[in-house]
Every structure is written in structure tokens, then in C-alpha cells.
Amino acid sequence: MSGYTDEEGRTLRTAVYGAMVLVSVAEEGALDQESRAGIRAMATLPPEVRHVVGSDAPELPAGSVVDVENGVLAALRDSMSLLSARSAAQADAFADAVVAMCAEVASADGRVGRAEDAVVGKVRAALGR
Image (cartoon, rainbow, N blue to C red; front, side):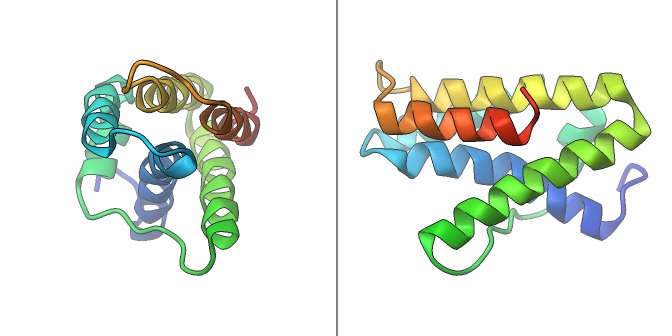
């Protein structure tokens, strides 16, 4: 898995897919458009990370909406720690890509609502942006 353990891969997948899901469910919208926008934007992930993220099915935390959000935000923070330990440039590229993916998902229906913007803000904070 490109030098990542199974656990690290799960963390990265939870962070990437989870961030997109949090934005997508923040407000009613065009789920199909949002999903396609997020998947297209995944191309901006660093290649090694993109490979790991695409190598297996994503797993979201279980529990209430708050539990899922907290779990995804923790996975984002853990991903930054993991990637920063390997390469500051890769961590920066990851953070920029995840923020771009969230922005694409939020604006997929032609507008960004307040709740979507708030979730993007939480994602940015978890990534240290």
C-alpha cells in the first residue's frame, strides 16, 4: 500500500471521504453532483496518497452525526500528523487538496450555503489551515 500501513490507509480514507461527506450532508443539495465534484477533485491529492485512498472502500466513524463529525475531524488531524512526519510538502499538498475537494462539493449545486461553509471551516481548522 505504497508504504502506508493498513491503519494509516484507513485514517487517510476516513479523512478524505469523510470530509466530503460532512460537506455534502451539511445542507440539502444535489448529492450526485456533489459526489462527482468530490471524486473529480480527488485528482489533486498527492499521487501516493491518492493511490492509498483509492485502494480500498472508505470507512466512516459509527454513531450519531456528532460522532461521525468528530471522528472525521480527528482523522483529518491524524492524517496531517502522519503526513507531516513523512514530508511537510506532502502534508501541505494533502491539506490543500482536501480543502479544494470540500469547496468543490459545497459549490457543486451553484451555491455555498452557510452550513456548508461552516463545515468547510471545521475541515480547514482540523487541517491547520
